[in-house]
Length: 374
Image (tube, rainbow, N blue to C red; front, side, top):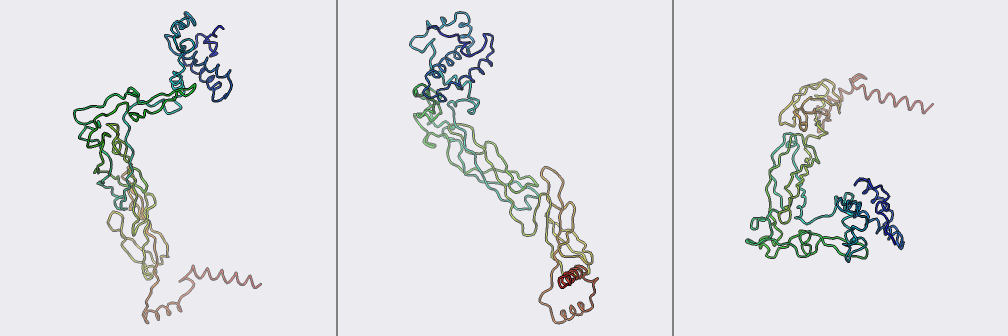
């Protein structure tokens, strides 16, 4: 039976570009893949034809030979292989060329594994978040072994090429029609084996140590900020690249201040007399200084005073937020007999203008009760 034309199999013209060939093969291979057509012998045969055609036409030299001599260009070299010299075991390479970008960039090759990323929780005070700091931290991690220079081999020896995968780090196994590729079990994907491992690290090329690092905390840092130190995580195996260290910053609650972004809030208790008569008080600020606050006569409870530019530092800026002093009028306790007499006298001589808010409230309540009686 005469073999079909490879261009006809892929449904493209003889002038088709490499991109057009690839697109045509991808579409048809997905359509006739045996997994999508279980038990369909025609689909399986069609799939084999597609692989054979694309294997030839994707290679510029093979394609030129095919264009000049047709199928005869490959029949002489077929040997014990499949039709037209096509080795179906090479389908893994074809599939990788086409679909590797969807699977994370293709198959992994042998190499030294990257070290794991690490997390470090760092708690700082609100004052430190305001002014920034240079923090010294100690991180338990793994570092490259100095004894073997992170190679994993004892001094005077060197890793050899893995006999199972020949340095590729991957091995193939035939399972029915398909060729399955997996990490080499002999070398663990490194591509090299150590016959004489380093005694200090046991052949891993790294050892456990506690590392001291200096971390710059910028002014204005907020709770939950993550700082990344590239390459300061665990060392990779056998000289592989190190992972990263992520520092998660938390800001401890403050006994006086509450933060909201760049603004600071502070509850300031004042005596009843100061609220009624007015006066001047001093309040603390986050930078360790004091600010004078003028209390007007008749200041009510929960009134907020704004102190501009007395709040937190803003990240990556020289600006500062504002501070809000929230007044808490303190009711006097443990009164003396004379103090009680003075308060009763004050109450008896009071008027609607002395307590306008409470007088207005109870007037509305009286009106409500009168309406209910009617």
